[in-house]
Amino acid sequence: MFKWILAIIGFMFFRYAGAVLGFILGTVIDNWSRSSTSFQAGYGREGQKVSPGDFELNLLSLASIVIKADGKVSQTELDYVRAYFVQAYGKERANATFRTFNDVIKNREISAQRIGLYLQQRTRYEVRLQIIHFLFSIAKADGQVSQAELNQLREISGFLNLMKRDFESIKAMFFKSADNAYKILEIEKSATDAEVKKAFRTMAKKYHPDKLQHMDEAYRKGAEEKFRKVQEAYEHIQKERGI
Image (cartoon, rainbow, N blue to C red):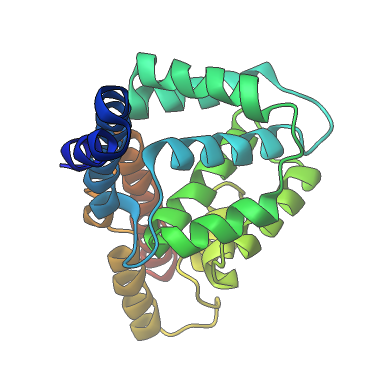
């Protein structure tokens, strides 16, 4: 629609050359509008939108911050990110994102705070939970999450406006400790059996994969992993208490 309107306006003021220019410009706007609209239902919130390209580049930027957090670049972590993007978006689209990142963004100062603010205004809460889970997975790809990486992840979580208890719950999925199961369910070890059961229902609802049906396969698998961790935590507590 835009291309014909702009073509007419261009013809009125600049005749044939203006009509051609208007048609080309309008075509670009039409194409951008169609691609943007198809994505808004998946990630955006009312009044705030994020395009697919922007989302992927910001996600890759956050990944680069985590990879460099401990002062070294792990090939294992790099390979994990590449495999994740290829699975989520396909090889061609993933490679295009990597090229854009290398050509335009890599040599600029990347601000976790700016990206966090941008994404918290334009994505649903459950999507941001999946983002921090993905970033934890990167840090753990080489076998352990260093203290420097953990500090960076906590900072990014704050910029994404995630609740502290949600961050601690996801963190517990990547660390082994005696009370991990309770941390995953966001309760104290002193919780009653009834409180444990209620916490399991709450967490199962929060992390249910259906909440990310609009996302690509890699994100849905991440949601399934979190959901499985919640189930395992509940089963561990049941076994521990003999209930």
